[in-house]
Length: 113
Image 1 (cartoon, rainbow, N blue to C red):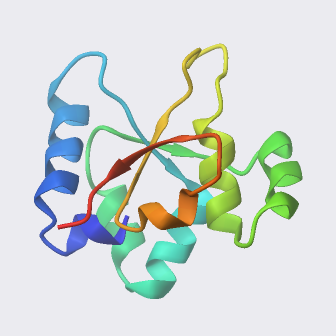
Image 2: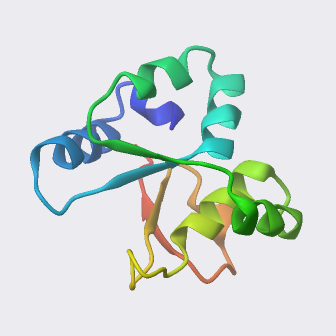
Image 3: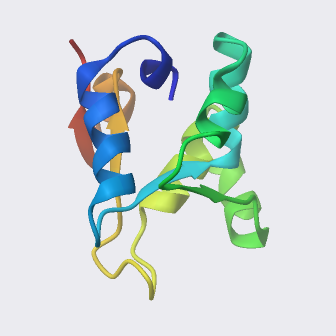
């Protein structure tokens, strides 16, 4: 999420497509939003102002998943990437730190410059 405010072209393209194209969705887990804002203050407000981003609340299933990872952000993102009725194939985690996800059963999109 911090990549969105640093001029990362790939992150900007994802945000644009989620806004402009039918069938494209960009999800922002609340816990990841908090961690991004702590790392780069103002990130949460910036992302909240952008159209096309769906914010995922910390519901009970997500809260139960939090204990399984090193950080709340990673746990919530991992939970959000799992298949659901709305997303039968799950979601892809877009990140500038793909090594964080080595060994996890999630699909990753590397946003590293």
